[in-house]
Length: 130
Image 1: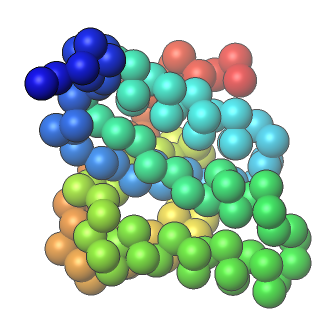
Image 2: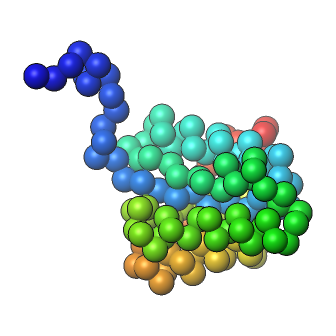
């Protein structure tokens, strides 16, 4: 028999989308943007946003080359194990070159046949004040 709590749980049939976003250029601002993007994606779309690098940024020193590399590699299993259904690339520079991290996530997605979607401009009008 189903418990009463089960009726309040969100749908488990949502796609899992990896949120790729430049961080290093302006870390605090970009972390706030990623969190806001995740909130919008979760609240207003039928997707689960995945941004594991937010935790890595709390645990590692992004300015240390060794920690930066470790942080990047900690994201690889989401692609190799196909835990994510899609890669969404958010381009805060409105079309200029991707960061190294986003470019690597793009390569990983392509290598594992994970669809890539670009979300360059549509979210930034809402997030410009962040």
